[in-house]
Image 1 (tube, helix red, strand yellow):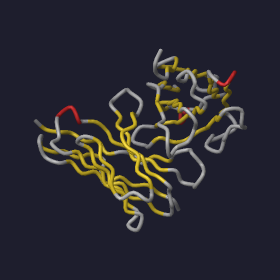
Image 2 (cartoon, rainbow over the protein chains, first blue to last red; image 1 turned 90 degrees about the horizontal axis):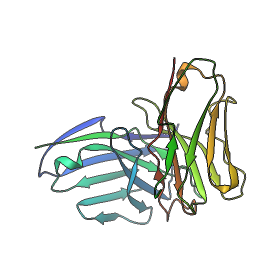
Image 3 (cartoon, rainbow over the protein chains, first blue to last red; image 1 turned 60 degrees about the horizontal axis):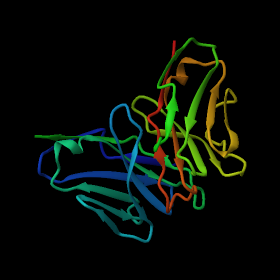
Image 4 (cartoon, rainbow over the protein chains, first blue to last red; image 1 turned 90 degrees about the vertical axis):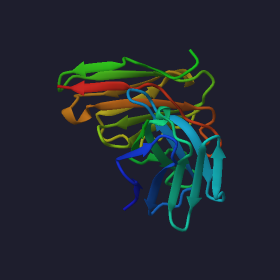
Length: 113
Length: 116
């Protein structure tokens, strides 16, 4: 069956360190993968998109990698800050040419001052 | 407003009643999506509207769920004969063209539905 797994429900990281979140998928061949941030009581906010032919994408302190052989994406936040504390969701399109997204259950990240 | 808005923000209803949830997408966005997020679960796709095309209803969990999009703008998600398992946050999103590889989905704040 098709599945998206994010490495853990919750992750605690010391301020200033790099936080690394994992998204693994099985039985999909997505054309792209997206990462979102969700704060309590709010809708998700888009952060980054990476395509299947891209190995890495960066935006300020954020970096995403995409390994289609391992069927895995890694999401890194460098020099983490307490304001980075949120739930992070990965999402992919399960069917090429179909734009609806399938989301993982998310990882709740807490940056400890 | 500049963003996606949803109403009501909270809805408490009794089992068996019908509810309507409203979504106002960003002006000019042709694509509109409804998702459901239950406690501890990821976002579950429900339905997708793109321009004048027939909606993709493949995510609707039962025939008690329906949605309309009038005039290519406002959308209403209707749940008939609500059940306790319908309790969740219902999120609406819109995007400019519905091209997932180029444009971004913008989410509303959601409607928290509680069925007693």
